Structure formats: structure tokens, C-alpha cells
Length: 272
Image: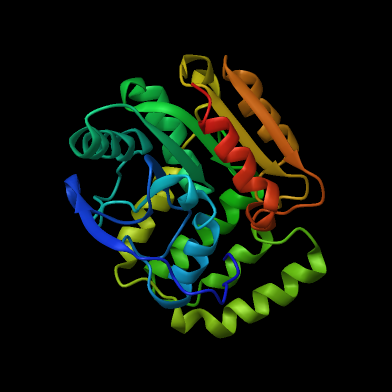
């Protein structure tokens, strides 16, 4: 979903954490765990999807060793966000042995919030970007339509258009393009994709935000079509030690492209 860049990719190390969770790492310095936005497959990205991810992470990799962590493949049907977070907690404990900084973007933000509430001992500081304490109605409807279509072998990507761009006219154009490109981005294991999206559909940590102990930065775009300003504010207001940054005019994806995004994240995580 994030645009690609032309610069050469940095050196990438790939591996697998506990529960078979795939990751790649770039940069050097203190660890920063990036929990990936929604992706059709629970695998390390390739090609343009990898370029998109690296473009967002490259500025952060100048200050941190960034671990881009995906969800475990082969999710059981009926899995909950709490169970997904528990797998992440196991993996981070085993890999790092101490609390680490966590950046969760979009669907990764859902996992990150659940992880930090349920397993406070593994998260030092938390950044949640283009995400919040629960899905808003537009995102819920689009994701579940996508999930059902994928599970039954139908074209699906166009169902995500309404939560990707804020303008109705742009959403219609995006939906048409996604419909055409759908065969190139279908998940290898549709049941896996479906299981995660069902878990996120039921995710709602609003009433538990006060339990989050880690200092938290919530970043949102003013024109995010997937999460409302009210949801960003509700998320930040509910966490005792939190900060909120709203980027004027930015959408769900374009907020991540703002030059201040990496600056805000690094400045926040560099605090003791």
C-alpha cells in the first residue's frame, strides 16, 4: 500500500522467530520491532511489497536495528487477538530477553496494543501509527468483505479501497485498479488471511487502554479513511502515559510518508 522508492535496498537479514514468525532486519543500533500492517501472506515480503516496507523503515534504520516481524503462518480458525499477541510475546522474549521498543502500523497496531496490554514486560516504549483501539465501521466492513471473498476464491482487493483513501472519487478509482490487480496479490493461504482478519474484526481494547504501562505515541493522519480522529484521540486519551500526533491532510498511508514521521518516532523512542 505504501509507495516504492528507487534507492538501493539496504542490507537485509532474514530469519524466523518462535511460532514460525518470519522477520527481516535492517540497520544497526538498539532493537526496534516493527509489527507489519495487513499483508495477504504471513511471510516476508518480496518485490514491490518489500520496497514499500523498506521505504518506510529506512529512515528508522539509521538509528535502530529494525526487525520487521510478520504474523505466524497457519493460524487456527477462531484465533483471537490475545492469542496472536501471546505468540508475539513468546517470540520477543526468546529473541531479545528484555523489553524492546515496538512500532505497530495499521493492523500491526492492533497487535501491538493487545501485546502491550497483555504482556507489559516485553514492551519498553510503544508507537502506534495509522491504528487505534478498535477498527472503525468502514475498515471493519471492508476487511470482512475482503476476507470472505478471499476465502471463497473471488476477487477481493477492491473491498479495501474505501479504507485506503479518503476521497469517494479516489476510492472508486482505487477500487477499479485493485480489482484489475487482484490476481497478482492473492494470498497463498486464504484461510490464514481469513483467520487473522476475523481476529482483528473482534479486536476492541478500548476498555483496557488504562492498563497499558509503556509510554506510548499515537500517530494518525487527519484524513485517514480507516480510523477516525475520534478513534486516534480515544486511544491516546485512554493510555496513561501517551502522546498524540495528528498530521494535517494526511491519509492512512500518506501519514507514514511524511518526513516528520521518522523524526517523531526516533525522538520519542530516544527518551529514557
